[in-house]
Length: 299
Image (cartoon, rainbow, N blue to C red; front, side):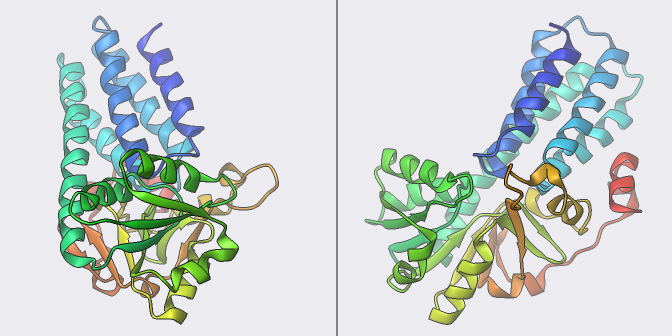
């Protein structure tokens, strides 16, 4: 296989992944780039530039609702532009991919630490599947005996995967139907969610999140969104548009993701610490956005 075919196959696999969360998919995107470059050491600088650029664009086409993929692809496109014409562009992009993986792993540990300080209690309800939540709950379990209720998170049923992963980690978990959520939520200390994106209009996450957050508000249960800074995207587009497109819908036509108002979330916990949605600053300078991305956001 060539570098181009390797990257095209990886991009297709990533675009079809509907089980894993944005943090996990970001790691796959970075490791796939690293693996492809390692497999094709004889690729020319021009081939590397063309193939990696197409890889970045294919990732965006396949997972446009995930801010982590938009940020990764944007940084990758800027890196390509910075090193265009360099004879060692392959080595520089290879190091870039490794750095992204390292940053992602370190962010998970820092979020877990910040969350341990900010979140009280031992009984939690979760929705969908988030590797950030899994990492936090697994670490917290080493200090406390936890009970975690995982919604099935239909359509898709990603909650089954999270519940199974928690059980493997030794955390007691129960799978529940969304219709039962309010009953179980009333017994919990907090509702925990991840995020696919945080945009000016709100937090993008699996369908059903909005309903759960309204229930939590009614019950006066705190809501915490655990996410790293790669999920922060200072524009509504192209994410909002992707939520209306057929590319994010299963066969029966129901959207898989939704935007939840940020004021329903008690705290958003980044690797830099907890904050509120109101405190976030949604702005960016033009130099930090690749031309290919600017077209998608209308700038």
